[in-house]
Image 1 (cartoon, rainbow, N blue to C red):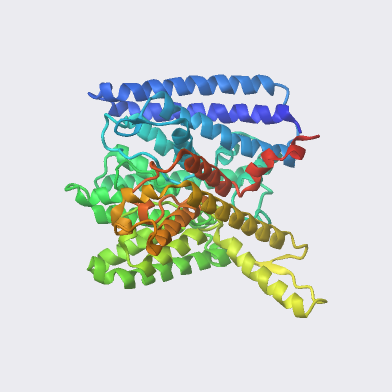
Image 2 (spheres, helix red, strand yellow):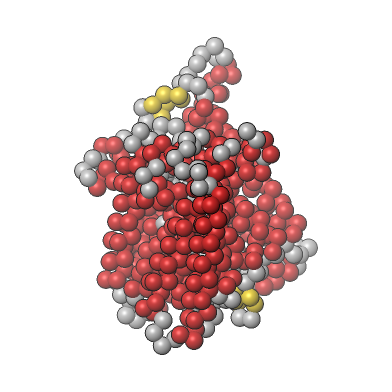
Length: 527
């Protein structure tokens, strides 16, 4: 293991995060105005965080001063990616801690709370422990802007942005391969620098277009920036307590236009951004031939029709019903997590559809987290081949996807291992939280359990459902869950252990498990 090279790369990551904090502070300054008494602690927290990040960067550069230019092998790439995300989580939590903000009135954020919020932002999960976002006396605007900026940085991936900025050659290829979610085989890495820059170009262009549209719909510049970051990065962190529902009650804002624009851009961000680049340049056939993209569009259409059918009598009006169905479908399948309606109150079948979308997620090469549709396609093909092999053991069928063949079984094996790892993670976290979380937590939301006692069967079913969707939501980087942890609630009242566990689950889900788990294998660090 070449630790000098890993240290040098971590120094660059620390410097990148310091620059992101400067960017956040610079953009926050125009809104300080006459409320310096509210913003001063946030500005001080950001300045201290910038200083610490620069010191950490200098230390890593000193440790890896002879590592620049050395070859980066698979182990170094895995270590760099895993440690970079952990480092980003730690440094990203500093503004929350050093600004001394409260997660709710009178309750200071703990270290676990800050790490949870930081990881949620960088992994674009969008889950939160903050109960009050609108009161500047509780939440400084500059810290709220930093919270949205973590989405912007983590949307494509910390390493992807790094490769886009630096001329890294084959090093960039190795790093991006380790960080990207979704199967790696068949991805065109022969011109990595160009591919990454094209992807980042689409990412920035989508952000810019959405900002302009949100401004036309009546949003303030501050809200337009924050919600654009949360939409295109498919993160879901906003600036109001009740998410997008807030704009439905603002007199000078075109709420339907906001919802249509954000839903459309969430849908676009759930596509492969490189494929979207070729579409923008006039090459449509490559996208139309893509099996994953066709299935993605089909799932969205079916889900919108299904939810519209079950909500029409509830919401009233076809346009509003279709808009709500499209918004929530795009929000959940792309793992964004914004809410234009409290879907915790929807009919059970409509909620069940959202859980299915939560498990499915969008396309590989997008900003969305989770398993990705391509893995389910490969899983179905693998199961079909293996089923035939049971009664025809001498026949060898290649796995064919988008015209490419795989006969060595690598794709099939990787997909099966991924789903096995995801299943183990879900079951372990679910069982642990069922044991750890007290029944009294549900008494805080009596409307969700109908004042039932813990001995009641329905109470147990509600608790099991709430915790399972919570774990699934964090593993797929969606954010909100169902029941007591629905879109209008948060995770502040979970125990410290559960929040720490969910923080790990978010990281594992974002990095496809291995980039994090390998860091704790002693043999991985041996030469």
